[in-house]
Image (cartoon, rainbow, N blue to C red; front, side, top):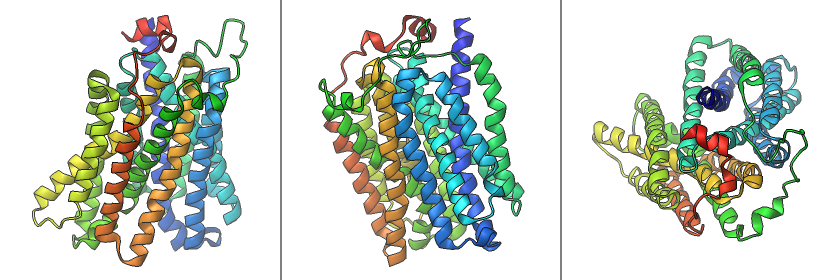
Length: 409
């Protein structure tokens, strides 16, 4: 019974993260068609605004959901957010003006942004006390699966870009009944048998009781981590073209980067839980910095280049997710959701800054090699931010409900 319970938590939280990966790529893949057809009179500046406002919504959703999930539990807020995301994703292609398209994307972003930190928190709460980093990295493989799925659907749909949003929204609606019947509550503090909410979690608790250094370090590391993830996924092909590689090879390198990411996520969390989350996260950021700097050097061997990009993906993407794994080791149970939401929300600012800063370098003609220097510097700052976080002590007993600990063992 307990094993089945945890399997549902793992499956449904993983699917929740799949939706985000699918949605991000769905919008990116649709923009060329939206511009070619001048849908709703859209211009390149309009498309940039819509993409940016989507990420703003995602960041705001992540920040807002933390205190709510700490007070009222994880299960119901997660389902409400998926419902909001699904409905506003489905109606996006139906909007007749750019203003309405942007408004709908922002609301969909609010729902989507709230989903991931709740899913990560539930996975950590359902995991054994010494497996919090691994639970986070496994959950985030869903993002890359969703991204690959959206890419394949985009190739098939081509001009019928609206199908991507209908499919993405419908997937959320299909999963909701399973969540209603199969997803258990994992937040023992938040929901009691009486149904009364827990005491309100306050943001200032992240800066009291000795947590200030940890909070600041986590926020900086999350910002730098998502700057790397979104900056590379958005501009790597263009950076490689600037280095003199052909277009086809540049697109292949983006695929190789994400294959490396999945491998890193599968292994990095286990290593962090076994060897220590702080040291592992620092090493991952440091290795990412070295490899990104190495990519600034033109390589004549395609095999060597592919290998360096693969290993770069292994370290870059996992370093960012290990920051999420840190949260469960740092904060007490009653503010874990708030802490996770804020880490994800501040990180989203990096997701906006990464493509923006790299785009400025592209526009100025300095994308190569300075783009890689920018990324290497961000990875180095991420490592230094993690270094300022006190080494986590043993996970507090309150961080693991007895039933969930027994289940996950």
